[in-house]
Image 1: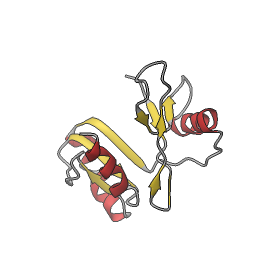
Image 2: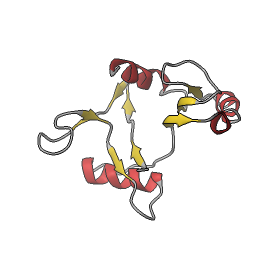
Image 3: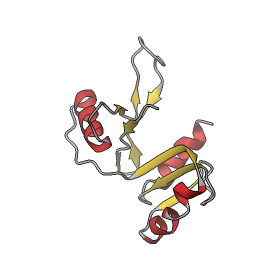
Length: 123
């Protein structure tokens, strides 16, 4: 398994995405800034490093979104009510609240709709 970190930067209702280089893997595809977590690095440190390397951005990083393609009921049943009570969201990739497993999408609440729009536009 490869662990990656991605930043979803928003300002005034706009979301920052980056276009990949013409040469290399997935030429000219759009992506959120970020990259692979290196050995000995946590996700927040990775994202801070990637934002600096790719965009010369110095950032304070916190986990505000999670996308997971494979979840079991024990991964998400207990966390859903906690997230929702704190103002966050926990749904499947279709936007349906769930606690039974499958895939999962969680946000701080403010990012739910912009990210859900991006997910839906790429299906």
